[in-house]
Length: 98
Image 1: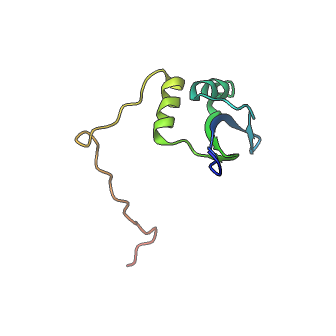
Image 2: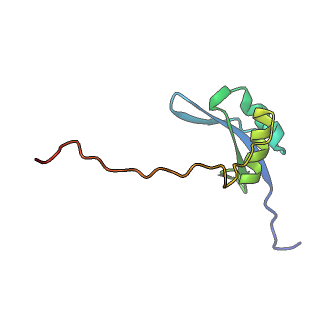
Image 3: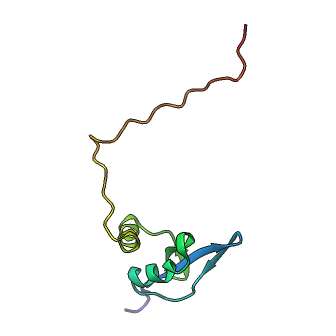
């Protein structure tokens, strides 16, 4: 179609090395391929999406796919009934007035 550009998404592996962000520069068409590429960098490896030449964080659905590949199973969602309520942070001054 004339005047309409389609944005193609590809995925890349990223990692940190000596406080510097690195990327594989491969244009992985699938999350699985990018996750396998990132796995070679161990715990510091991650996957991000690239749309129109600009990197972006994975969407929740994409992140769930990567987690399933990396850890071998789909992450479970905690039900609202089983979640513990967060305890409030209470400010406790280190000096007591007398």
